[in-house]
Length: 71
Image 1 (cartoon, one colour):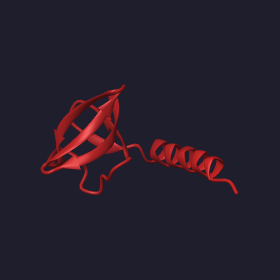
Image 2 (cartoon, rainbow, N blue to C red; image 1 turned 180 degrees about the horizontal axis):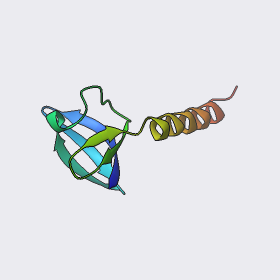
Image 3 (cartoon, rainbow, N blue to C red; image 1 turned 90 degrees about the vertical axis):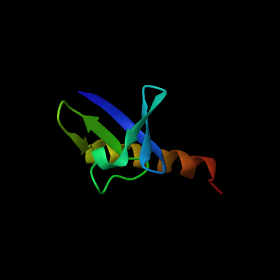
Image 4 (tube, rainbow, N blue to C red; image 1 turned 60 degrees about the vertical axis):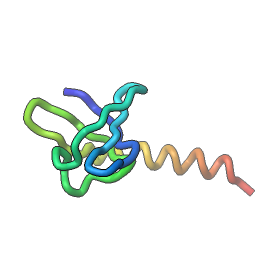
């Protein structure tokens, strides 16, 4: 098993970051609802969205943004 984060989409490919390095993966190999910022779990025959990790990371980013842009 390995985990990656969708950085962006380029045509038919998703650019997925694995430990600081990116890899192009066909969008057709990902869950249809996958979007930028989602954490993906790659196992032998499947790819799933790690919703808990995705939510945790988004909350952490939002908290950092709130701190930076405090009035």
